[in-house]
Structure formats: C-alpha cells, structure tokens
Image 1 (tube, rainbow, N blue to C red):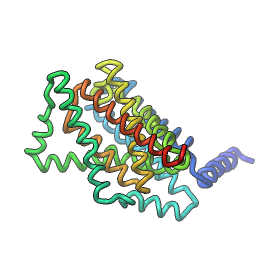
Image 2: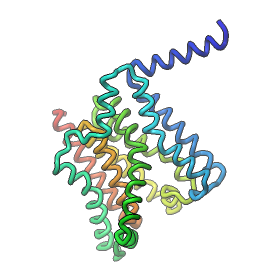
Image 3: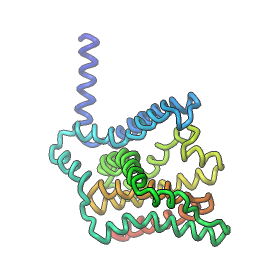
Image 4: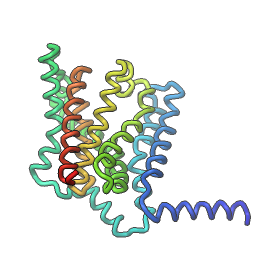
Length: 282
C-alpha cells in the first residue's frame, strides 16, 4: 500500500467516524484549536485590536464555533437531523409572546438594575452616554445592531447551543448549561492577551474583573442552554446572546456594577439548575 493510499484510508476513516454520530469532544477540540490558533497570531506578534491582521484573525477565529458546528452537521448521515437543525436556526421553536419578551428584556433589566444598585452603594451614576449617542443616530444604532447580531451570536451559537448542545442535551443541565458555559469561557482566553479587546481591558484591572467574566459566562451558559433546550430551537439562543453583547456595548458598567450583575446571573442560573433537578425528581 502506498503512502497516498494509506493517507486516503485514514481520511475516509475519520469521515466515517464523524458521519456516524455526534462527537462533542472532537467538536470542542477543533473549535478551540481553530480559535486559539487564529488569535495566537496577533497575541504573539503584539498587535492591537485596531490592526487589520487582528481583525481578520478575529473574524476567522470568532466564527469557528458555528462554522465547525455546521461542518459536523453537513457531514452527518442523518438527513432528518440536518433538516431539523437548519429549521431550528431560523425558527423560534416553543417561544411564545411572553417568552420572547423575557428573552429580550432579561439582560437589559439586570444590567440597568445593577447600574442603579451600584450607584446606591458607590454614588457612581450609570453611564448613559453611549446609549444616548445611538438614540440620536437611529441608522447607526440599526447598523450596530446588525453587526452585533452577526459577529457573536450567529458566529457562535450555531455551534455552542446548536451542535454541542445536541451532543449533551440528554446529560443534564450541568453539561448542556454549565459545561458549555465553561468551554465558552476558555474559548475566549486568547482575547485577554490582545490589546484593545474587552477581555484585555478586564485583565488590566486585575483578577476580580476576569473572575466576574468567567463566572458570568458560565452562568449565562446555563441560562442560554436552558433557553435552547426548553424551546427546542437555536434562534432564541442567538437572540439572547445578542441582548448580552448589545446591552454590554450600550450600557457600560463599572467593575462594581459588573460584580452585582454577575451575582444576579449566578442566582438566575442556580435557580434554573434547581428547577431542572426538581422536575427530574432528583
């Protein structure tokens, strides 16, 4: 057997392995390696976020969860699963009117409440300057909303709360919620070492902001995971992720306010975990 034939046989074996069933570990490994590999270039070269190489790496690395998820879905032999998967990207599933209102209002409400509680404790008023500027520029607000929806929610959730959640949905909320939330957290690691990123600004302020980011991301992983699981759709997860990023840009919080918001998300996540196991009779 020639080397070329041997390599072809190995490749065919890998393809059969992927096609046979869903593979969480392989998905996570490929996604992390893809993102870390792309973002390691600007991080190691000391390039800041405004550099064109960094932005290209961000687009390439940031879209890895959804791209890898779609590749794995395309490679599946399950035609019915493929059809269902793509329907879940564009359909709201079991979300009703009240559910949709909660989906869009939860993060803004928690953020505003955190800002005012922070003012109560520290006398630092909420920062409405960014929100005010966008309110006076509706076209700019719409463009920013579309950008925020694509680069983040759509680029990630098809993988996280789509393919990976499908792999772990029967293992319980600690897997499809906290587990994916933890992976989502470490996926961001290279961003902490690129000047000009949100994550890097947290690192510059010390351990506490970084810890808040990690805890809130895991907690939000539980919340988004439960939303996706209960609705049977990926689109609600995409929209909820959008509210996180959009609200975070429009209403910047002080470190103290971030701590309050993190605590609120943790309480909500713990409540969901408790209700999950109560329903299961554990």
